[in-house]
Length: 479
Image (cartoon, rainbow, N blue to C red):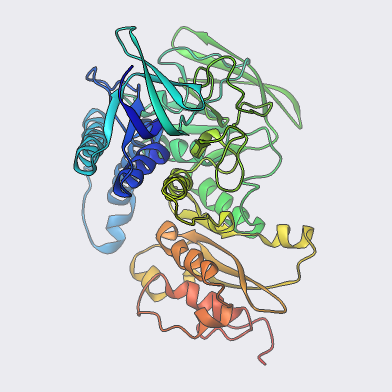
């Protein structure tokens, strides 16, 4: 029998490694189990987010956006760059370097905080034991007073489009293209699909997105989603809604895709096809047979509001439990659970989890939409301000988009904030903080914002809630 720990965490992604560090900081003897093997053959931390998700995709998004700016937008600013080109291989190397630095950094944080790193595949063997199978096939049993499952998620595969290496790929494979495909198909126009489609569209691909749903970004406020779709279409993304893929077939160097839409059966051909239809919880093999941790029909682990499973002393966080599959949601859950195990009071406000789509411009939101408010019978008032009227946006040559604030009609309490615009992912934090403190739209309206900034659009949107916007004509009568 190996060492006994106060806490063993299974998985070193954003939920797992953060939980492990927090637990160790609180004086708990902590271990974190991870099986992910990197390109160099060694175990790496960071999970999907750092290795094949959030971080590498943002590196490609940033590089491709700078390329488009240099090629198409610099001239308007007086910058002459007529011979701009993109070295895709070098761009990929830059992405890999960032990933290596960050994953290596977690190993350093484990050492600094006294977290024991265990390499191998972890499995809950009982409410107080974790079995770890090393890469050499040997198994070791560890005792723990508390177990945190942070196993993450994996891309969903669908029968009509089986993966074919280098041709039909998931989101992970789309981060490894070594050249720009001329014709790129993307199945799914959700967050991941839009981001990956944007990268390769900027680099010259003819991108067609096939989305089975009738609505574009249905989780986003309808007016913001409509404006976003218009902007992305202008950039060259061909987004086909109500397009349900029925089959794909690799023929030589091409992928033939069949789908149905409002006009019946259709067929199109791509050089590469990316399947981005969502992710599923990775719980298979993480719980031993006979261990009675409850799962739902989709494989998610049942937990309460504080991430407790039905088995005493066993918790689960992140993508393998209910709620949005977001790295920051997983991290906050990991911190909450570590605090609870250490005997502290802790809770998490699931109503203030921000979401971001890292296209250009970015789309970010927190709280409810106008449509959700209506469905719930909540009377709201809304203020919106276009970046086209923002001095800083004009100076940045980034005038597309809108900031929108939704407030309770009776109490003026902010219920939601929705932004499409440059740096929306940064600005949405204002909405998160305001909602955490129960702020009113008037609170933001009375706050002094630096000028000129993109954030002034949020200020004006808050003013517009009661018809008091300064830098645009108000639709509502002032009171």
